[in-house]
Image (cartoon, rainbow, N blue to C red; front, side, top):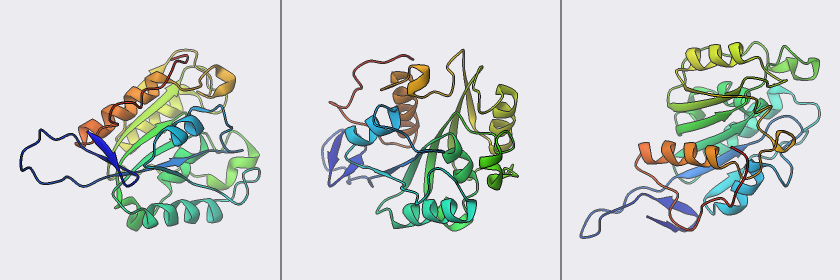
Length: 210
């Protein structure tokens, strides 16, 4: 397993095996962005193959601006895409059109937001309930202030996502004690491994709350 030219290469056993295709990881923050101590920011720094969606307005999110920016980032990626989204970034991902979605091979969707819970997020309602055309893992917390666990479970069922329920993990961000977040790192690793990719050695997070 190796990292070359900013992309992760799947593990190979050597010999004359053909070189596998690399993958691009796209990090999709939510409302108000992810600060420097957030696991999304730390992972972006750690992974040479990761790029990050940058929105023009993080404070007043508008769907007609956020979703095209995400789609453009996906379509401009040099390789098949794995999305790592948090909060409203999960909902923006679900809103992507078929052209961008076809470039995605997997998604880690963490602590999705409920756009109907806060007026500032309401432009993203209604949330799409169509199955996602790629493998996805949805992680939610029993006490997330931005989304009830039952709604997160409904998202997972509608999207066809594997559902990981955390106990008392808040919004799975810095405020709830999640920095490098090793559990999330392991879930990303499993998502990549399932598609024949891996994170390689020397990229393990230091330590953090699960």
